[in-house]
Image 1 (cartoon, rainbow, N blue to C red):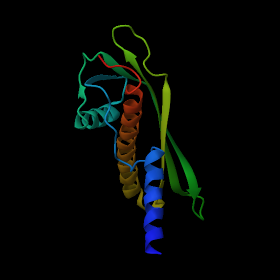
Image 2: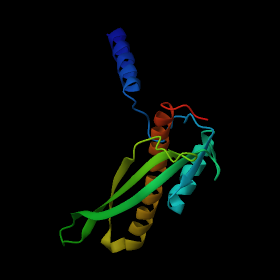
Image 3: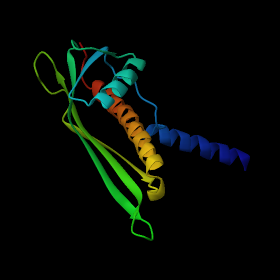
Image 4: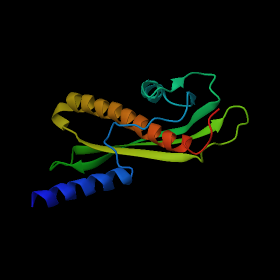
Amino acid sequence: MKASAGITALILTLLLSACGWQLRGTTSKPNLETLTVTGASTELRYTLEDELENQGVLVHGESPYLLVIDDEDWMRRTSAVDAQGRQAEIELRYTLYWHIEDRKTGALLTTPKRVMALRTLPWYPENATASSDEESMVRDDLYEDMSYRLINQIATASQRWEPY
């Protein structure tokens, strides 16, 4: 009985690793030495640059590769109301459109892509200050999560072309 449970756990582990599943916050290392980030909001840029440099990718303005953030879109909506009809839960959706291009030729190295992250959080009408602070923390978390997702996609894409 214990042996079959161990075999089952091993098979599940292998299946999860084979399908590309990763723990949140883990990133793959891009096959790039340098990268220039353009078009990103300040919050995304700083978070992304820090994580790229943690992965060994030097971020500066003279890289042969441009990570172009074409658009960032925030959507905030009420997803639930309480018995009095007041907002009780909100949903934050952060969508990012991006591509990588060659600085010298302007050629697209990736097709334009979209990445989206979604979070819901409770909203307390009687304590709007705490709810507002929580929303701010969730936004920061979404920037971080989006940076991890974007770096994983960059890592996958950079395996397809030969870096300079």
